[in-house]
Length: 37
Image 1 (cartoon, one colour):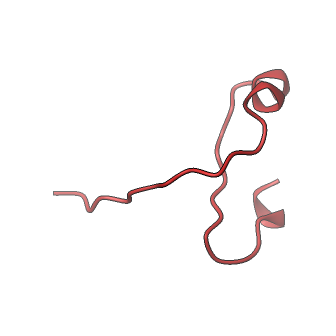
Image 2: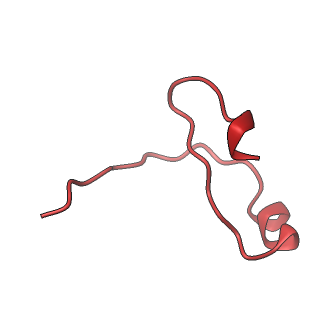
């Protein structure tokens, strides 16, 4: 759950099903956050 995400460098992703979330699993990715224009 989102409230369980603690610490820097972590994000919470939404999946439409529990199965899809399990298929994705845990990953280390480079993320870029862009400002809205």
